[in-house]
Image (cartoon, rainbow, N blue to C red; front, side):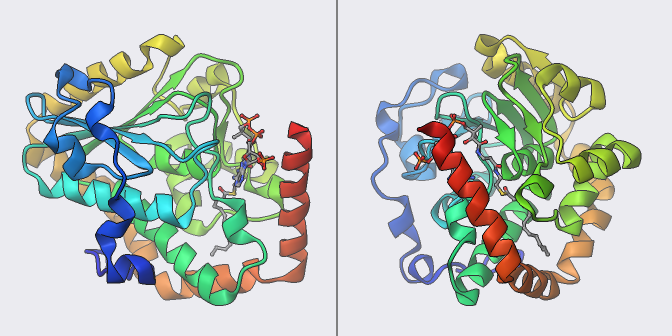
Length: 305
Ligand SMILES: CC/C=C\C/C=C\C/C=C\C/C=C/C(=O)SCCNC(=O)CCNC(=O)[C@H](O)C(C)(C)COP(=O)(O)OP(=O)(O)OC[C@H]1O[C@@H](n2cnc3c(N)ncnc32)[C@H](O)[C@@H]1OP(=O)(O)O
């Protein structure tokens, strides 16, 4: 499936894109902002791993990741997120999306490590294209995107949050946020580094990226990684209030300003997408990197037991 940013989608999505969007239970989901959550609109926008609760009256859709146990960004979740965002974006009823988690205690655990270990170069190519595509879609969205971060938010989870216009984090000391890639023995690509620098500044990024820092809520607020820290049961309502503030601004002026602020960063990737994919594939295929990732994944699995 060719999208605006030029990416081709997984073969199965190419053949039957909507096959990824079956099995929705959206009709039974809890009401969204303004109470419009259960109708046909929800069915239209949602999918197996992405619940969408559209509220036409407010022009806001709440999009919930549902890939248990930890919303790791599998190829399927990445694909479904891009398709759901594209659908909402193409429906002029909507002016804003709130991104949040339907899984308890975790916003997203980041890239799915099983997609990065023991696969072949063709798979890594397809996977990294999907990562790029989601980032471009979110970062350049003309909609207002607010992240309602209701759980842990490491690495790829933080990347999604950083692409939003505003971030609200639940005040729970276990809900760390940041780019911890170095602790896995991998590096952050330049376009994500740029996004970090744009958000928290050069010196703070230099430290946090090298150390792989994961910030608890109070520190995340202090460093400017999130805009608000609120009690857990107020994350969604605060995100809706933030959304209202952003939607009070005329769309055309806000959109032009967003583009002006973000274009240079996005263009850096758009100019060298293929090279970035090749870099990623040759990096991730290295024996030493595969070993680091496998050790990390094994530690995660053992920690549980
Ligand atoms: C040109 C570019 C060149 C090079 C770039 C190279 C690479 C790309 C770089 C950057 C982009 C971003 C990278 C990433 O996102 S890597 C992922 C990093 N994520 C993490 O480190 C988080 C790991 N997870 C956790 O810390 C915890 O799971 C979490 C705090 C999220 C939740 O804790 P909780 O106690 O609730 O659950 P667990 O028992 O730990 O986990 C349950 C279950 O899920 C598995 N799991 C967890 N995280 C992942 C994951 N990211 N991928 C896959 N699977 C994951 C975990 O192993 C458990 O599984 P099981 O034991 O089988 O039940």
